[in-house]
Image (cartoon, rainbow, N blue to C red; front, side, top):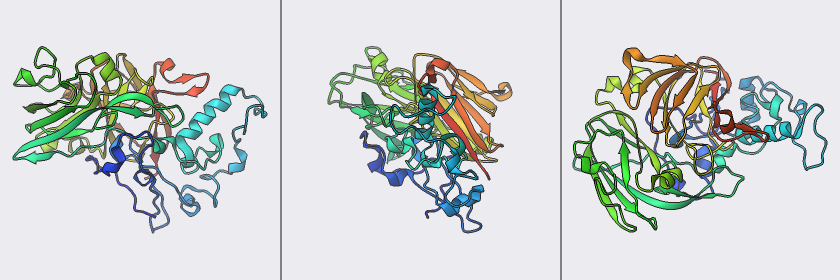
Length: 412
């Protein structure tokens, strides 16, 4: 079996074939990676909620023994004790249940897929042979490596009409994306870098790009039509060029017909690492995963990184890891993000370190346009729900939907 995938603070490179924007999803090889270490057959599954390192796992029966399983049964559980979904309408519903219970379980089965056994959910959802749903849809947020023109970091962006699957069951929606994906490519630079963004408009209407949170020296790079520039016409390429003076979790998005264009997917993360390496999250807080968490609430309903539950990707960490979550609200509503079982240490707002004003919470309200950085110490094993706490954004009579995912903490 392939080697274990180790999360790092810097996202790994991605096969360009994986980011075509096709509704068929990423290639299986990008996601399905199992691991069995030679010493004792220990198993680890690494799944990050940001596009660059999303991964799933098919785990063999022998590997399941690392979780206390016996042969091909679930992780320490007899798969036969779990009910399976009724094969067709009209089949008996388990005693004491309603159609709501069956529908809600089916959503969770789609979410965890064949990871149900390894992560201990077999008693609740049964054994599932299908892959987790997040492996069946295309993912945005893929890192875009710049080319160099001297000391200038150059990013080439296209603005495209795309078809995008919010989940793997519903038909794709007619969305917009940068470089064929929603969210657009993850752009990562260092404070003080000179940046050039060549934006080619492939839409049938005009557009612009605003780098949200950058403190420009030259206001003409701010991306506001008829204030700082003329809108970019269909077929034209416009170049933005600026030096980035401030570090932090920043964004980029359309700023022309923005209600529709941003609502349909013209948004992305612009991460500026501090010039001082000691101030970077991996060094300052000891984080091992850097997770971009962009939420929106227009096209496709309530989404995390362009998907709704059960197609949202879980965050997976090992016990003892610290992870950084960069919340970015590109929607029109406030969303209070609630971590079950874990506190969040809030360390920055809108890219600015909070210093002595850092605080702990388990529910964090993120307003439109805001960015918050949260450090979570994953000290307890389990599968922990993680969702917006405006309940109509996450759960209905058909079970969970929308802004829901999970934090899965595996044994160290």
